[in-house]
Length: 185
Image (cartoon, rainbow, N blue to C red; front, side, top):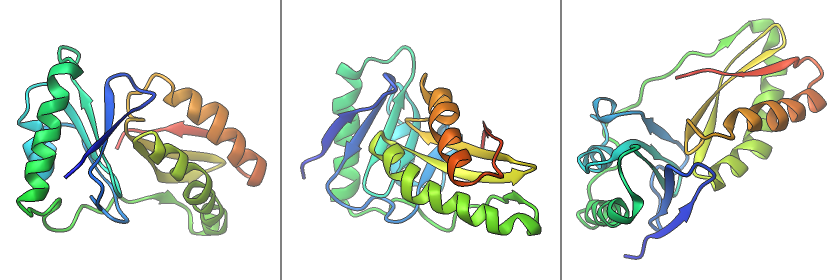
């Protein structure tokens, strides 16, 4: 099994591509070992000293290291854990994930559908190429609420991406949008 590794705009994060589906259509973001219980893969990765965050994408795994860890030592350990997990044939996720409610008024559903379509077709592919994801969390009175995951969570350029990239694009295509704000979880 060959696992490709790519850098991301976040220097504390690397993207690992195992050459097979990881989550398929979904994603899962684990901010710490206490949240990884339903994922044998994330649990194994958090067992490595220096792993601070695990994000599972469609066909990639994004690992964020702690401030004290160095990629030179951590990268081979991560590669070994990923390889061992897939070779053993273990599941990536067990059970169903929690459903997060979206803050949306029923009368705004048409606007929300436009926003989600733009996020899915124009934003999500670019963000995924950097090892992250963006999740819609709500829309009220012109304000779009988004949650950044994976390499995008904690990335120094994520607020600029939200304000100058995503906000400008959404305001252009959906005039009802006045601003975009980042929310945690």
